[in-house]
Image 1 (cartoon, rainbow, N blue to C red):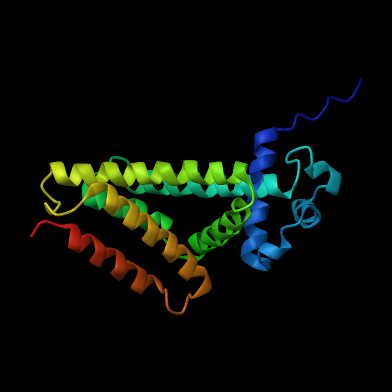
Image 2: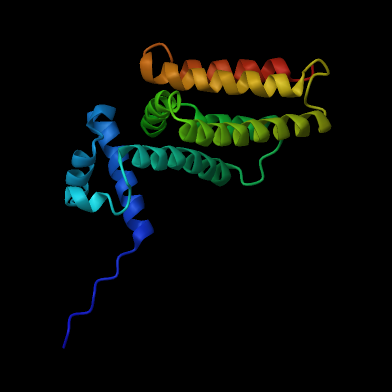
Length: 200
C-alpha cells in the first residue's frame, strides 16, 4: 500500500517560522536573523525555508505584521468594547514596551523602520499600520469629546498625531535606553499626557 503523503499546514508553518524569528531576536539579537539561522532554529533545511518565505526581508515583514496583529489582539482581549480615553489608554499600553515581549516587538519594529527607509513596499506596510492606529486614536478622542471627557481646547487630529509620536519615541527609548525608559516612567508619561486632555 503506497504511503499517504504528509499534509503540511502552510500557514501553521509560517506562524512557526515567525515564532522562531521572535525567539532569535529575544535571545540572540536581530543580527542572528539570517535565513540559515532561522532554518536551523526551526529545524528546516536552508532551502526549505524558501518555500514559506522568499527571503529574509519577507520573514521580517511577516514578523512586523505579527506585531500589529498581536498588539490589536491584546487590546481586544483587554477591552473588546474600548471607548474614550480609557479605551485609548488600553491600546497605548499594548504598544508601549512595558515588558519583555513588547520590548522584543519594539526591537523588531525599529529594524523594520530602518529597512522601510529604502523600500517603498515596506514603507507602505508601515504607513498602513500607522494609519490604522492613528484612526483608532482619533475615534477614541472623538468618543471622549462626545462623552464630555475632553477639554474644549484639545484638537483631536493634532492630539492623535502627538500621541502616536510619543508612542513611537517610547518604543525607541524602551530598546535603546531601558534604564531611563522604565515601565514606571513610561506609564507616568502616558497618564500625565491623558490628564492634560481631560476636562477639568
